Image (cartoon, rainbow, N blue to C red; front, side):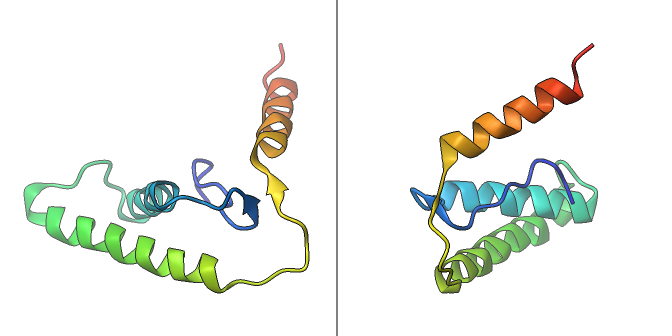
Length: 89
């Protein structure tokens, strides 16, 4: 899957609607192959983003876990460390 789509579940604070919409946009871009759709496809593209964001928000609200919520900064720091090791010269 696209590296720009991040896990949004089980974080403290929870994912915002902007984060969910950004993930939906990345998903639609990935599967459609369009960064920006043509005028003729714009309505379908935008509708898909809205619908996927809506369904994703419901999914995140309905999921349940016994695991403690993860800290966003800790996860981001670990990702930065992995990237530094991966791209080290």
